[in-house]
Length: 86
Image (cartoon, rainbow, N blue to C red; front, side, top):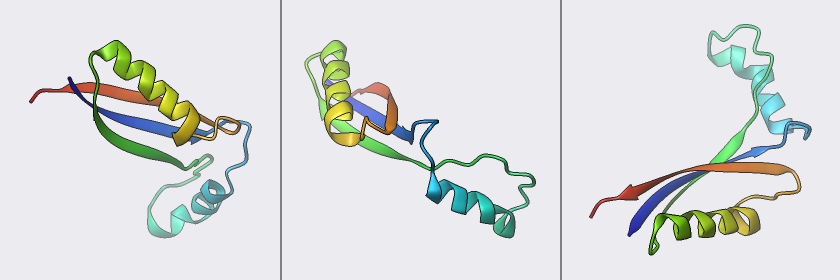
């Protein structure tokens, strides 16, 4: 079975986001977004892979997210997983 996933990685709420703070401080210069009180940056990873079934795909995607994609000391992750028809 072929799968496609997007893994979303974000800094934990209690971790300071210096890059996000810099963007928030300047967003009003390029867009009419008033009183922007919170802006945090993250990353998204698009991945396509094959697995024997959905359970296996979820287990291995979680393993890759914990051990490779995210720094779990300061980041949280979640994903959207869909089966791709051939």
